[in-house]
Length: 203
Image: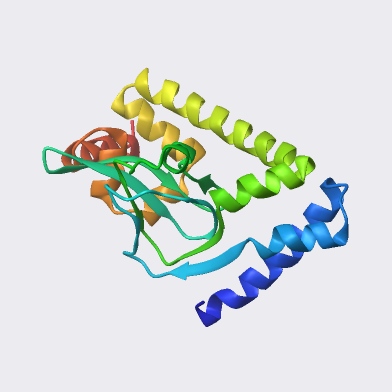
């Protein structure tokens, strides 16, 4: 754990324990058991969290940083998503079927994660149904947002996609390299440069 991240993790631990106590009608011992299954990890920029061919068994929440999901198509990187603070990522299919994932997860920035293995999560769900209910609600809400984003992406032009990023995720403009952002938008870096110039030029 990087020293500069210790205070962040300490604050998150306190907030998370308070949230568990507020939303779950279980004993203090139960809350401690759930919390003991959570691990906090720091990764430097450039770290690969998972690569194609590996089984991904963790459910991760980003406390700080940015993680890119991408795959290779004919040797070219195709970015499918950027995960940032307060977003989670996992592959329940990979764990349940013991099948490898077809993508990379790489840290675009120094990143701090809250990590729980999906196997541990399933065991805790069986023991504490209230915990499962809270987690399922959060998962469903985030999946709904992802689906809305995918539908919007598929039905919009490159210009509209870029404007959508400006409106809903403006931090990505400064946080990720232009070629990665262009890949996420489904265009070339040159096309992205032209779009940015058109938006910034006075009418």
